[in-house]
Every structure is written in structure tokens, then in C-alpha cells.
Length: 189
Image (tube, rainbow, N blue to C red):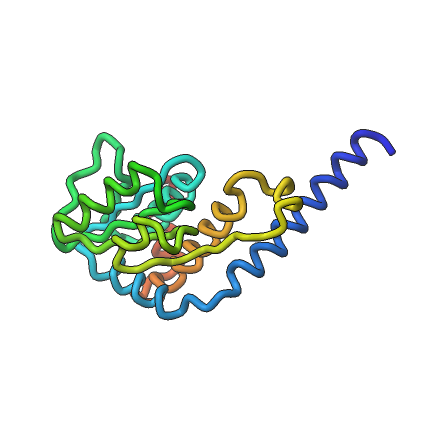
């Protein structure tokens, strides 16, 4: 077997593992929590999102779609981001729910009267306890198989897919179409 063949087989095994894990992780019923999150996102004056590392990338992707839906949305930490205020909403993505900066963001947001939705794997974390709504993503599995999706890969992939499914609900709630979103795309396509 050539190295190219071995590499292709390894990539195929990892892809298969990740896809099966996503199906299992996302099969959990989050209907009530998603409905409450959508209500918070669509009724807020402004929406702020936060996350660090790859969790932050999933959060940024969500923020981009919310802007394309016409929602006044910002990523916390950017130089042009305004202050969070009463009546705003904050989405925080953190696998552990114990990242110090995420805890600081949730504490500040709650202190000023903003609603907080968290996407986390830490059911009993400080982030979960301080959030108004928790979209829990449990990624436990066979540790030997996690070599196929190292570190937080399963959480981050599941967070991205879960938040993309929330976009569909927000679209429906706001009566928006893909054409409406395309008109707000940074480079109209």
C-alpha cells in the first residue's frame, strides 16, 4: 500500500467518524432551547457573538449570517464593536464553558441586562449557569477514536452545524429569504 493510499484511507476513516458523530450529537432534542434562543436573537436591539479559537470561528460564521439576515450584529473584541447594553443579546460559544474570557463576557452582559445564549459542552460550567439559554453539545465518545477528531473538533463542527440550523429558524421568524440575504452579502452574488 502506497503512502498516498494510506493517507486517503485515513482521511476517509476520519470523515466517516466525524459524520457519524455529528449525526449522533445533533440528534438530541433541543427544540425548546432553540426556540427560546431564536426569540432572544430576533427580539434583541443588537446581537453580539463571542468565542475564542475554533469556537470563535464558528461564532464568527454565525455572526456573518445574522448580518446577512439584517440583524445588527457584532463580534466582541473587534475594534469597531460597540458596548453591550440592556435589551441586547449575546451568543457565547465555548466547549468547556470555563474559558476565562467567556466568563468575563457573560458576567458583563448579564450585569448590563443583556440576554445570553451559550453553546457549550460544559453542562455544569460557570457559563451554563450564567446563561439565559444553553444549547448543550455533548461530545463524549471512545477516546481511542478521538484521534480522528482531535481536541475540540467534534464540538466545533457540531456548534457550526447547530448554529447554521438556528439560522434557518431565524430566517423563518423574520420572513427572510436567501435572496434577501444575498442582497446583504459583502460581495453581492
